[in-house]
Amino acid sequence: MSRIVKCAHIQASNAKHDGTPAEIKAAMIEKHIPLIEEAGKKGVQILCLQEIFHGPYFCAEQDIKWYGTAEKVPGPTVDRLAEYAKKYQMVMIIPVYEMEIAGVYYNTAAVVDADGTCLGKFRKIHIPHTWPGFWEKFYFKPGNLGFPIFETAYAKIGVYICYDRHFPECARLLALKGAEILFNPSATTAGKSQYLWQLEQPAQAVANGVFIGANNRVGLEKPWEFGRFYGSSYFVDPRGEILVQGGEEQDEVVVADLNLDEIREVRDGWQFFRDLRPDQYTGLTETVGKYR
Image (cartoon, rainbow, N blue to C red; front, side, top):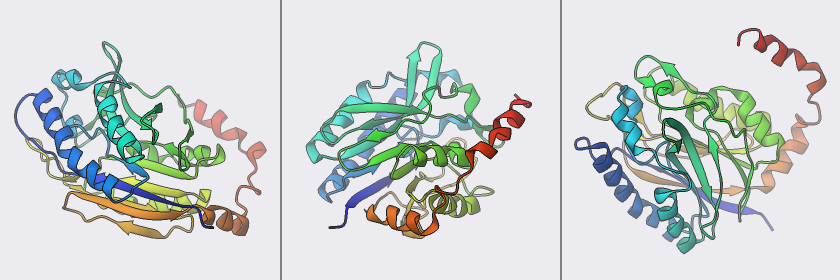
């Protein structure tokens, strides 16, 4: 019998463009509740929300007012959404702005199991600081929890956030540690990244024999309007074939059935992991270390 897991992304535009950061955060959380309910009613077993789902992509500016939207993980937002995970027996990847202590903040994704238990969290490892409007080093400390594997009720999953996807070591390590599905919640705009959106994740799915779910928000966010978030959230299989893809403009629950039996089938055919030569890659860390 095939081992099929129904997975989904929520891609959504910002709910409120004016008001205080706390008001904007509250509006975005409220906007997500009916979308989460929709996923639950469709029988989704693993649901991924977009990067820092509870607000706009505030990294378009550098303003300490957004620090006030950070919270403990687990904390009030994760605890609230965990009730929906339990209600629908639905694993949830919940990306939020995390405060470890005052002045120490991370770009984090909590993973909540189907019984509402928080299994742990991933902190974004690679932090961009690039023009135009991706000023993330102002807001986030680089992650320090490595690449954990979450053994959920339905599958072993791994998470890496947005910019992490440009570093193939992330997907490789998660796959070697046993992840079957990788989730990449993101916030990325049209322009130089869009063609990579269709290129990188399918290539990494093939190289590692895993399913990958890539999630992106939609629309222009005021007052910055520095770039249009183009949605296009998708799931790709271990052969590199995109199974389903969301639109570029609309709020949407993007659902796909993933047949996890395909992982072994594909890996037995290609044997990339059998033929790895880690003994020959030691120069990687040695060489990269020269530039740190």
